[in-house]
Amino acid sequence: MDLNLLRALDALLQENSVTRAAERLGTSPAAASRTLARLRRIIGDPLLVRAGQQMVPTPRALELREEVSAALRSCDSVLRPGAGFDPARLQRTFTVQTSDLLLVGLAGSLTERLRAEAPQVDVVFLPEALEGGPALRQGWVDVELGVLGQLDPEIRTRRLTTMTPVGVARDGHPLFNGPIDARRFAAADHIGVSRQGKRLGPIDRALAAHGLRRRIAAVVPSHTSAMLLARDTDLVTLVLADWLPDTIAALGLRTFPLPLDLPALDLGMAWHPRNATDPGHRWFRDRLAAAVVA
Image 1: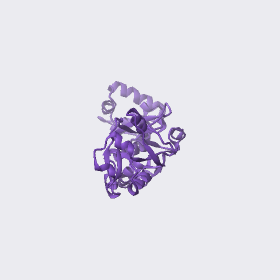
Image 2: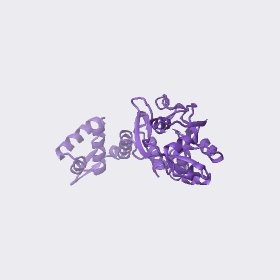
Image 3: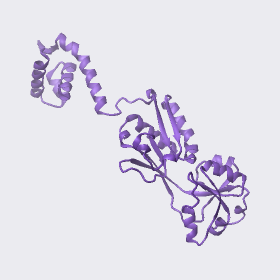
Image 4: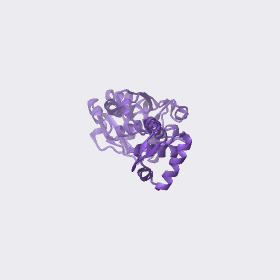
C-alpha cells in the first residue's frame, strides 16, 4: 500500500464519512469514494457501512484505526527529519575541533546551554591537530570551528562572526609608555603561537611592507600559554578583540590595537553533509553558534 492510500485510509477511519474525508484530503467526494472502494478490495473488508444517514466502521475498521494512525505518524517522522525531536531525550557525544583561545571563551556558555536543554549530551573538544585533514569526512570530528582553511569540496560551512586581532602585553609593559606605532611594535620582543613551531606569519608580512622586522623570542603551541608567558615577561603576543576580557584583566594583561593594516578574521563552522539534516546535529550546531556570538 502506498503512502497516499495510507493517508486516505486514515482520513476515512477518523472521519467515518466520505465527504469529510475528501475535505481533509483536499479531493472530491467522488475521488474519495473510489479510494474507499479500492481500499475495500485490498483489505477485504467493507470498512465503512451505511447506517441510516451515517456511515459506521466495521469491527475490522475499528481494529485498524489506531494502527493506521500510528503507522502514518511513523512514516512522517522518517520523511520529515526533526519531526518530534526532543533535545531533552538526546543521548549523544559531539566532537568539536577548535583552538584553545576559542574554547576558553565559549565552552562555559555552551555547556550551560547543553545542561539546561539536553543534560545527556556531552562534548569532546579536540585541538586543531587535524585541521585541513580528513577529520570531518572520516567522522572523527562533528564540527570544525574557527578560521576555516582548505576544506574538502563537499564540506558545508556557516559563517558566524568577524573578529579583529589585537596585541596584548602585561599592564606595566614599557610599550604602553607612548603611542604604539609600527616601529615600536616591531621593536618589542614577541611570542609566536604555532602548533608546528612556525615563526613567521601575516604580522611579519605586514611589518615587511613597512620595512620592519620583529624578533620572535619564543614560539608556543597555544594562545593560553602565550598569555601566561606575556603575563610574566616583557614579551607581547596576540589575542582577539573583545574576547575573554575578564580573563585578560585577571591575568594583569592589557590589549592594544595593532598598528598594521591587517584583515579581520572570519570565524565559521564546518561539518560534513552526512550530518546536514540530522536533527540532533543541527540542534547542536545552532547551540554552538549561539555560544560563539553570545
